[in-house]
Amino acid sequence: MTQLASLRLVSLLPSATEIIACLGLTEQLVGISHECDYPPEIKNRPVCTAARLSIHQPSGEIHQEVDKLLAAAASIYEINLDELTRLEPTHIITQDQCDVCAVSFGEVEKAVAKLTSSHPQIISLQPDTIADVWADIQRVGETLQVDWQPILSALQSRVKTCQTQCESLQANPPRVACIEWTDPLMLAGNWIPELVEIAGGKSIGGVTGQHSPRISWDELIAADPDTIIFMPCGFDLDRTRIEAQPLTKHPQWEKLKAVQLGRVYITDGNAYFNRPGPRLVESLEILTEILNPQCNYGHHGNGWLKIDE
Image 1 (tube, rainbow, N blue to C red):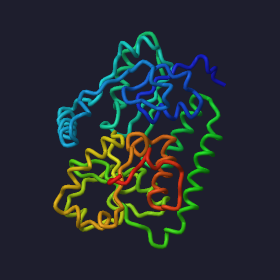
Image 2 (image 1 turned 120 degrees about the horizontal axis):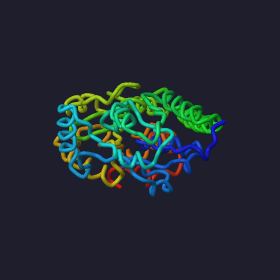
Image 3 (image 1 turned 90 degrees about the horizontal axis):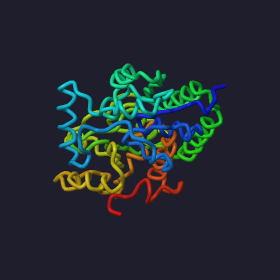
Image 4 (image 1 turned 45 degrees about the vertical axis):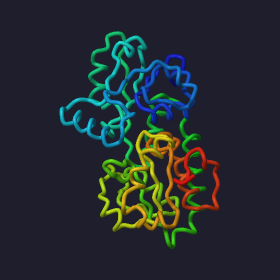
């Protein structure tokens, strides 16, 4: 077995930090990304990355800056090589799923090649579905030689509980539009359609295991979902409320069935839906509460709200 005291872990994305924490390795975490903020006890760790754009701009301006950087073949994020050198990590956990979400795998490889005082092993996560997230937890646990099975079993048990509680909706599942970005308008893909289905709904637009697609206003009107859930990538409840406001002022907004039924919600996408780690189970519980009002996991007011609350 690996000697835990010898582990020096650097996580370059929030979901990896949460996987490390759920495996009981918080004390071995010596460095984090600029976006890592959970669990709270890791916030004082040295930060090893920075973004080359500001997230405080409106969604449309953020999207334009991202497009410019990608068109120029430039990374959206940068690694603090001096900090990484000083930390002398034994392992670096990163991702190879989305260059917009976190430091790219290629950038990490370049940085590691420049290290002279340590030769860390790179663990790269590539989650597109819930099964991939479970596999990532297992892979990190096996690589670091810690017991991952009880943690994974407990998470899967909570998923099964939600699934059982939502079976009554399966005969007539509500059609759900999960908004991952507001300008341009995008619907959530990857693991989100799968979570919606487990919670008793039918996701419109997004496809399990595939990246988030754009959708036009005309397409949204034509789909006319029963429920709309805002979960913009990287935004908390307050920021999501702000970003949703331009959409609610659109001339066609009031025509939507979800609006007429009062079934429009905002969520803390940054803490939950956008992070492919252990808290996807809490994301599922939030969806279960939204689509099944008789269920209560205690997330209302924290993880989600009705848009007019």
